[in-house]
Amino acid sequence: QVQLQESGPGLVKPSQTLSLTCSVSGGLITANTDYWSWIRQPPGKGLEWLGWIAYSGSTYYSPSLKSRTSISRDTSKNQFTLQLTSVTPEDSAVYYCARVNGYFVNWGQGTQVTVSS
Image (tube, rainbow, N blue to C red; front, side, top):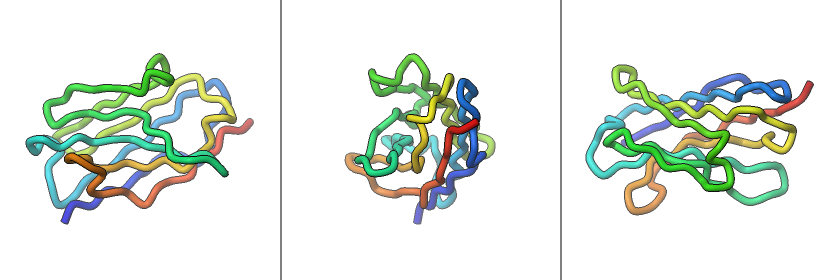
């Protein structure tokens, strides 16, 4: 059973870079046909997909956040990382990582990130 766990700071100052890591167990992030996604949910709003990194290492981002988003991976640690630059309070949300293979198969429990000075 694949399990995902998000980690990172819960508080980020405006204009700084938000950085979160997703640690994966029970499966390799290089496994064929898997895509590893980041999703967030601001308070009182719906889920917003941010982007993914594929088993091959290729990436794809939401057009609305593409200029500020970067997803990378460390295959030796079986982790992938989200970086979101120039954050504002509107980036405050619960951030989730997920495994996608035709549909969202596995989710992390989510981590709250608040952007505030």
